[in-house]
Image 1 (cartoon, helix red, strand yellow):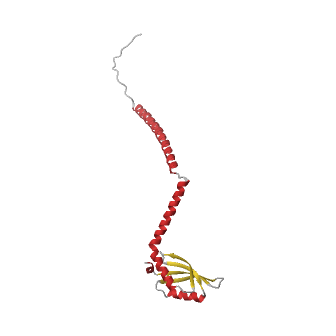
Image 2: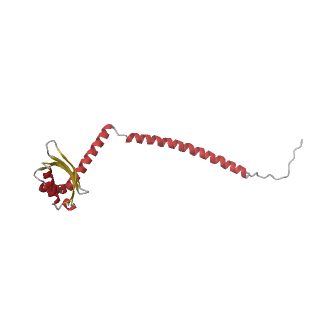
Image 3: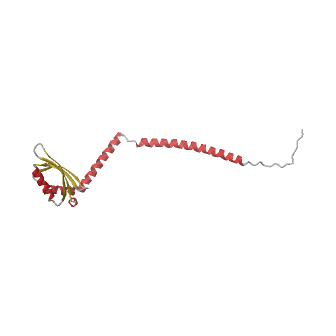
Length: 174
């Protein structure tokens, strides 16, 4: 057996382009898998934190009662503030009603809408004639713009039950 030594120079073998793409694809695939598992673990950690935060935000019944009491007090404070801001308007209205009320008419209910300058009044009059006189008195008041009689009936005692809407001049409530 003979050993031959070739006179050809040895050259380094270059990687073909397909081999470079294969290594790059394997490297990217491995990177994606690693990133997937890291993000999956991070998501689980964040879900655990979310559950802990939700549990810490749930209120006990005592805290819920306290919150309801606070809201009740807030509503009372707001209502009282409204009364303080508008007490002059109501005082003017009651002064007008006192001055313009017929002696034989009794007002039972009063609902006042300051935004529309309207009062809904219900009450009793001794007779239809007295009710007519009361309406005439109201029509002669300069602070009263309009009167709408919305209900009229006779009570068991023989008195006249009535309800009407009075539209006032906005200057009355200033």
